[in-house]
Length: 308
Figure 1 (cartoon, helix red, strand yellow):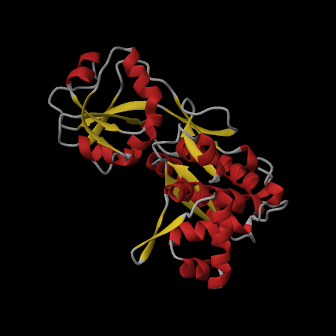
Figure 2 (tube, rainbow, N blue to C red; figure 1 turned 90 degrees about the vertical axis):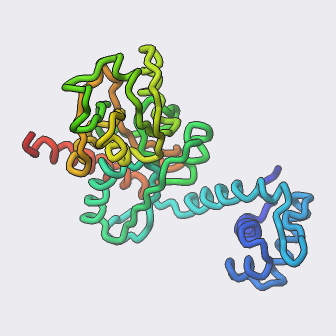
Figure 3 (cartoon, rainbow, N blue to C red; figure 1 turned 135 degrees about the vertical axis):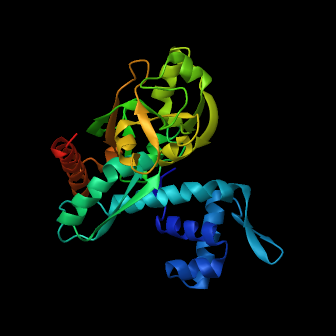
């Protein structure tokens, strides 16, 4: 395929056609007349040797190839948009733009709030958008990173991408304040016999792998896609949950739970900001990374000055 022979404007038209599934609405969306959008659809059909949109009754539906192209076109559009909005200089006090970060609710609660404070103080025109980490993050990390500004995630799940370390954390267990059989410390037998609430994502694998290596098979009673729900599902029950110590401190006033130490030396947790190499030399992204580092330092400084 000779990319020089392609009209990149067709990417814009293709995305609109596949998402709208209507020539007139697609044209209105991108500012083209109905004849111009029809001509673009004809060119796309010749290129792919496929109808892409097939009339069914009184409306259009995507062909099998059109369905495949739907997600790919959205990804390609995002990559092109980020490519052509790259900047040689970036003045945070004057710029108006949005940075999108992929993060778990844990990372947003512990670090994202501090990052938002710094951005609010230094760059009033900058917006942050946090999106939940997809379960497929380890399957196609390159595509995910190419369509976003960064990924907040601990070491040990992905590799071979640039990253800057932010802060350290550790794993602890939560039990109900009035748990009838757990005192100050859990035993290995407790971990096998008590029901668990777990965070069901692929990227909590290091902590889960460690349990397997110790011969511990959690008896999972509830799985959720939110770390912040774990304390609420532990309170008033016999359940236990493995959570990050920083989040446990934040959630302590909300749920009637207490922290107990694991009966083994839990793997450490080091949170980092990961990005695609295409962003490495972009001035705006350099500012984002430097700001994330400052936010992490402020987070640590805030903790050292807090009593206890």
